[in-house]
Image (cartoon, rainbow, N blue to C red; front, side):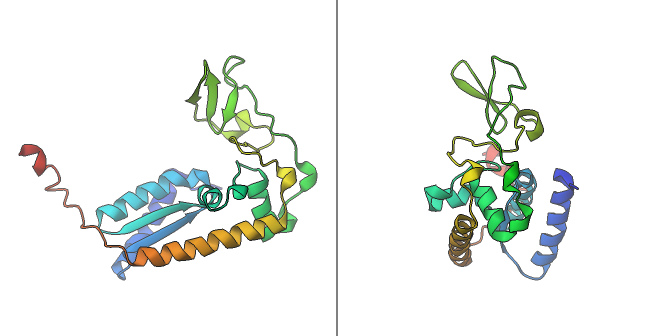
Length: 193
């Protein structure tokens, strides 16, 4: 089941509006799904407009910046290791296959990663559903992280390391100055000068 972009945005807006009423001004959204990014970004922009700080932490982007060994694509060793660490019964390693990206746009435009194809030496974005171009669900996105390399130990190390960084980040965010709310009735006055 999916709430969709607007549905998730509405839920986030309702929750953060209530938290703001109780005095919350700093927000950290820990995200684990690419489909949530747009909703989280929209809600974060609204919070910033209201004089709050809101960060979207996409764990799959942060982890490899902390340790390159933790990098990976969709459904690769990184994500599979995290799932093995959290709930080993949810992972069936006998189902792991090679990446096998499909040329769903055409033979002259092979899929190269998440929503991208290659043509004439350049990558072009083609937003579409994963099922159209990744028969296995794994999209390496330039990482060498075949899901066969996954382990609960790697997942535990990666999740604990990322959680420790997130704790430091959250504490550092407490010290940052809040922005002034934007008064949209006066937001374009500078254009008249």
